[in-house]
Image 1 (cartoon, rainbow, N blue to C red):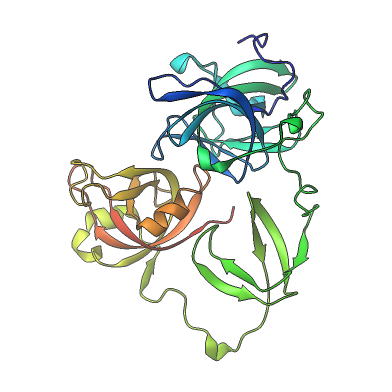
Image 2: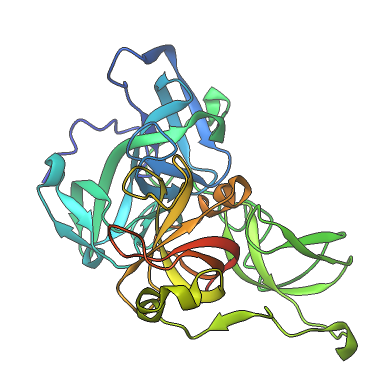
Length: 344
């Protein structure tokens, strides 16, 4: 177990302390600057938008800055995780790995406010244990524009004295279960995704979930039956990946509805001949519950929205079959037409 004697006692468990980045491109700041995460943001292994996603950090988490590399800042994320969701490892010099299938929450203190969502496979360093909880930390990178400066007098004190992750009370959303639209509100299919409807002022909604500055809502109302049409006409439902691979000529060019699990965003190379070189695509497991894989080609607009998803999210996708069976690995390739996060 790693010792915690090197940790500043004046910093709370959930502080993100910016550490000196290595390499010639790293620039040290002349004095430490206190920052706060402006919006829910990705925590990546390397300073690149395509780098492995280790966690998703909530807005309001405080940190101190020491160095930067271009548009990226190296930080140390620290907090408490449920011990049953991590296992021992020696990979890359770390002590623990997140083994929970859908990742795990990182908290400000045992059973306290959630400050980040750790991805399955995220490697961690153990600091201490307390009953069924483990205090952990991990160095990685965050995008510089997601951080904002705060007054130096707002530097957090000892653990537990100053909350560093925004609570429901901080955001004015105190334990909301039911609410009404304060003004005309645009309803989006996903955070930052395309709009689907507009809610009138005082339209009642039920709050189902939160993600950064976004909340997922449910609303009810009445429309004339003549104003409706069948959902997704021409879309084939219930087709397995095995069927598509075994009868490629029958399915190429057809629209399919599949449930898949988000694994990563990748860029096409010479092994993915059917996808234009450099094209970004979603690597997904599925269609669920099958254990195979699917490549789903993304537009730039779709890419920006998909990158904000939590790791291993399950998606309902509608895609046009571009290639029923890729040359080398035999995986189907779809062009994404529409998608939504699957309710758990």
